[in-house]
Image: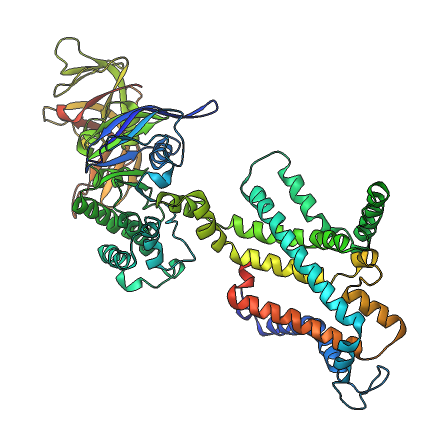
Length: 272
Length: 357
């Protein structure tokens, strides 16, 4: 059913509501990008002039620069872990028939449903317990962040890969077998290419959601071991200038670039 | 010589018997149709031939070689699926080339054979399309080309026409038969549609409950069903219980008392029925003068189809028979309405005796 099948007032209302919603999503982003160029010393309105100084300053601040690279590293590693764990899990969930399948599915999805601050706190306490018992420091080290970020990425990975796996016609794998392909060849030349949109979308969402995480990271960062979002929060406590706008703009650009590049190779809409 | 032999092949899923003691010899170049209702084991049999299902018992021998325990990729069989099963991320040409790639055929030869295979199904101009840009019929022809290009020992077709519309099905049916004939390919075709089975195959195998019910050339199976199941599946609703006459095998004593003359029949073991095709039974409101078998009754349901009229007639003995009067033509005899007393009559050669089981 298309909106334009209906009467004009309905169509008008539909368009208005759609535009309002899109405005709500886009306007804050537009504002933050805009204000990152203000030359005002303290962030305020209206702009006194425009400058690129804040971008240079953001780069000069070691907290932001190091935070950026730490977030990048942690997010990439945890995305790889989500992929390695999530791919077989998705196969089991999509293809397997075993008792407890639905329960496992729900458990794998649960990090999406539990508030980040709650699971972050839980992880922190858990890591401390392990530290008491084994002297292995997890909270405050890379290991803690990687575990937490992998938990963030896993549900996205599993959900998106499972969805594309369910969409795979099992006959195509049998067809490949009958044409002479062994099980491994079928996996790499047929199954994997067909679920590629789901894999890429899953990795993308795992990466982005790890990269932007604040709540879990709050518990798990340590001295000289601060992610970009925590660095932003720390900075905001003492200073209120357009540096944060510049950092935010870089992040927006990064995520947008990721989405556009990905969409060029696989139609993301097909992964949902 | 790709002759296919099934030796007491069985497939059990736990307690459930999908196929039981299937024994069959399929000659080189023969076109066999496996026909039956869903759940009769025909698809399981085909999948055992293809190697997708492991037989619980028995042996499958192709061209003298035991393939029972070989995985599908080492059987050299072309398999065509109901839902086409084309690789969605590959073009038509890449789909067809896949099997050759797996066999490490050289680039130039692959290109040449792919082109010939696509020519054979009249799709050469679509070589660079993706499967989803093509119609169902075209996709199934690609699947056929893909299965044939590897020069399989046996071609296995799993309800390949079921997803196509009626006109296309007719066309594809003829195309498959012609391809099979021109290549001399041993072919096994699974279908639930008796028309598809009859119009393509050299021999058809009627299956029910995991067992072979009847095997034979289509005309033989159609004209001489051996069991009540075969008769029912092949569209014969009229089954009257009785017993063959002891002396001559040319008369049949109905349980309701009448004696029906036959054109000579082989006796069947156990309980039996007289089977009559609706279109072999004539219906008239006056007693016929011809020397036919006849039974009196009353029209209970009349269904008008234009070219034919179906009458369900309640016999005076209480049984119900269906007769089909074909195309009376313009200005022909008027239809007989519900409640009309009628005579049903048929020549002795129209009746066939079938076993109850």
